[in-house]
Amino acid sequence: LQSDENSIVEYVYKPSQERLPAWFNESNLQRNIEIVSTSFLSGGLGLESWKHRDFTYPIATAERAILEYLFLCPERGSLKVAYQMLEMMVGLRPDSLQTLLEHCSSVKVKRLFLYMAEKLGHAWFDHLDVTRFDLGQGKRVIEPNGVYDSKYGISLRDVENV
Image (cartoon, rainbow, N blue to C red; front, side):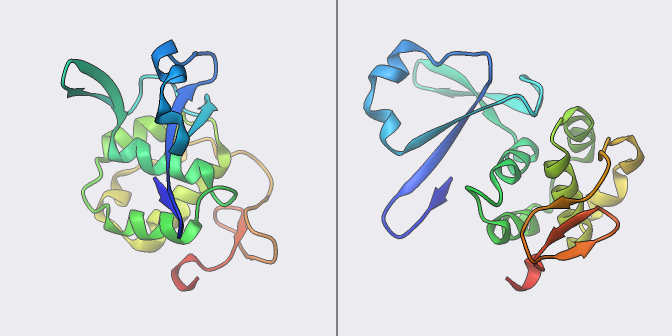
């Protein structure tokens, strides 16, 4: 979910190979919804069922949702907002995060998440086995003219003081 002065945009994530149902494509729901077609996380990981009226559909757990938001950063999402959201996520489940991060194919998402989580000092961070995450090789420029963090190999502005 992202808002600006004039509107709220909601993001619906779907696996790259899946098609949206016809009823969705024919509805007016698409006005403020942006479809994100990606496969950076395995389809069923970090999803739970939510029932509304006669429909049951999958929604992201908090652990998956923050990774999905980081996937949008910085092009369509704000790193500052991501940091602020993660700051409030004191109850994330380390076992769920471990599984998601081990199966996440986006080096950018994993590096950003670990950088922010470590900076915030959440208790659950100490329960993650970071050595089991493939963080790729080389440097990643998240934001031009950013400060380089050698531990996670990313360049970005200081998210605490943006």
